[in-house]
Length: 516
Image (tube, rainbow, N blue to C red; front, side, top):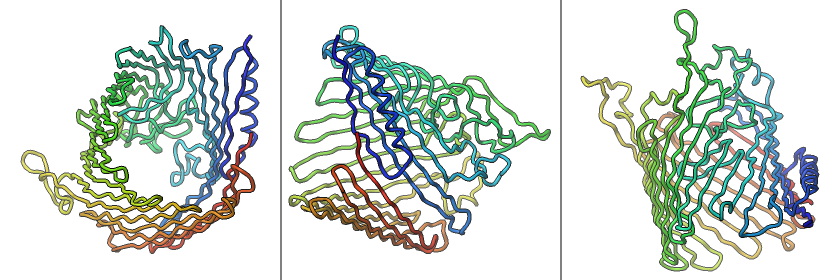
């Protein structure tokens, strides 16, 4: 029988939190997994973060206080099939959990009878299974791979997560075919999931204990949302990377048709299977070694029947110390099929920017960007409220608003630290924003001690705000001490001020250390 192995990675702790017991449990769990027969490796890691902050309204009340402690625990087990052979089938298991505890949530925020403070779906200690799947590779003569469980898909359609299965066939002719199906990860279900991967424009979760006439825009989520998709992509080519993908998600819950009751006091509902989202996308990159690259992507939304985004960029390196690039991007928001925003007009934003990065001497780097952003609106925004529909039922012609964008970054790395400068200016028809930051970090005694400082000054104006220009000034000072390798104890003080919110202060203590 092959000798069993267990390898644990270092567990990193950031700031204070109740996490050491969780980490010890992870190690014990990993050790327990090593007992069954099999020559596999296991890695365990954990992170802990603490955030204490308060956000006050410009009017003084209300104030939102939060005391958040976030913990993650990850376990990876390799070579479940036995001794590792690079030409034979491989089987791994991956799991990652996250607990995001907030001790600052007030009882009023979770009380459905408190119509002013109640937040539907707010949880004090949500447990999120970020991923948990078994993955196989090199099956059927190296052609077949698969995943089973909660997993991510990342492509031109963005980050997405689902519970189900994925199969991938990799051919010898630099083409791979992929298909998957299951249920979209959504909040409010019994499957310890989050709502961050749902379509935009909706708020869903469990409505248990919430009266039907309270927060009617908060949709019930009690039934699984089926989803499926497929993709074709290139493999094994150094000069080309491309992927064509399609995905569809189905809504199945019964939801309110209108947030308002009818004359008899009843709420109309609708149910049945219907499209939540259906999109197709493509992304590709051409690379010429030593010269540069050309990238492009496009997404078409089949539900709204429009191209929701497309982009292209060109990068080149004419000299070793000089890199140039240009970006073109168009984006228009699209929404879940159950969202009320589908009934409103919405237009796209187009951005064109040029980039340059130069390193004139060792340790000194300059980066410069400049461009234009175009917003499209329905009618003239200055007179829109006075515009009346013409004989065809439409308003006046669309208008365009423009912003001019520019930024300059400089970073200097020296033997005992780094210094940086950032200047930016954005101005146009809707207002302006300009300012800069200066930051410095210095190390002492071969890195045992460090000190850092930041000065920030910005000015902005908004055409919708009659108060005129607003200036904001902030500074941060801090330092750290490393009593032994991979461990740092630090403290920072931040002070920000402007005429809208007055004075704001923040004290932050951090402890970063590695054990195991």
